[in-house]
Length: 267
Image 1 (cartoon, rainbow, N blue to C red):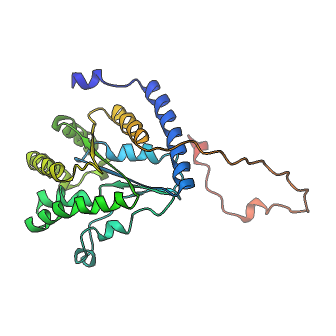
Image 2 (image 1 turned 30 degrees about the vertical axis):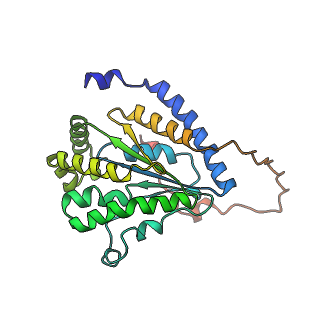
Image 3 (image 1 turned 135 degrees about the vertical axis):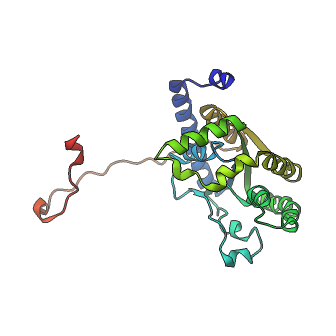
């Protein structure tokens, strides 16, 4: 842990650089919208590796009509009978949109495979089809970026412990998350096999060291920006119109409406 402490980015420096990068993300967003580009960013990694916090910082200042986060629940009975990639295809962006996958089709290479939620044949079929699927996306013009958040077992366990003790965050834990502790090596082997098959020249994996959350967020966002050939678009010039003169409107009396109690005044 001492090495992780030494690697920490001071809060003020982190906040300043994060805001600068988020400003660049807004420029990227405007370029995506103007050029009708399609950007897909896949966030994968172990439980408690920092994916959710990074996605939150990526999307924080973006227009939700342009950039949306996709975190699909487990498939329905109907979806189980579909082609595996089908429900993910439905979430892909149209022109001028950004989609952030908080876990993705790679569920089959990780949790489904390790926990026995798919058959060995289904897992092997995924490893064969996934490169074809992703090459099709890239060939069609989709900008596909894939990030694997790597966390050590000690740091993961400490984050689990903090979540258990924090009433605002213990919803993030499930029995399956805790079981991942006992299957650390199985997940490691599954990840290694996944990378062998899906680390493509057209859609490579980028590994984010995430024992230190601040550093991981800055590194991931800076890297994403460096991989997209965006440029700053001319801003739309807006001016506030003059307020028209009153036509005699009078506000409804306050006692005819129900207001939220002033809880702040009791503090």
